[in-house]
Amino acid sequence: MVLESDWEEMSRLVSGGECDVSILDLNSTRDALDVRIACVKRLLALGVPSVVLAGDGMSGVADELVRGGAFGHCRRPLSVPDLKVMLSGAYQNTFFKRPSKNVPQPANDSKGCDRL
Image (cartoon, rainbow, N blue to C red; front, side):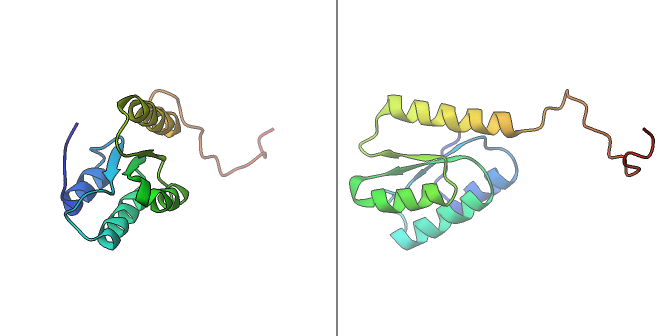
């Protein structure tokens, strides 16, 4: 687990494959809300499963981010059991979508059915 508050560093971790799941907190006071939303959208575009944390006043924004690719969102104040379930689901979703390294990949035979 890595705690990172810098958007550029988070982007590097995600694009480098060093992150299986991310938690994105909209309640941060570091940047303006529109900046935080734009950064979350850029991270979602990189394809890492993300769980968005949002207070009641931002549930509409969180719903929009889920429609835009986030795995789900949890309300603040945070419920640890709910977050645990959400993170587990996000990780499992990613794990099952990854191609297995032990399963042989089908041959890319361009001859088609000529050899029947």
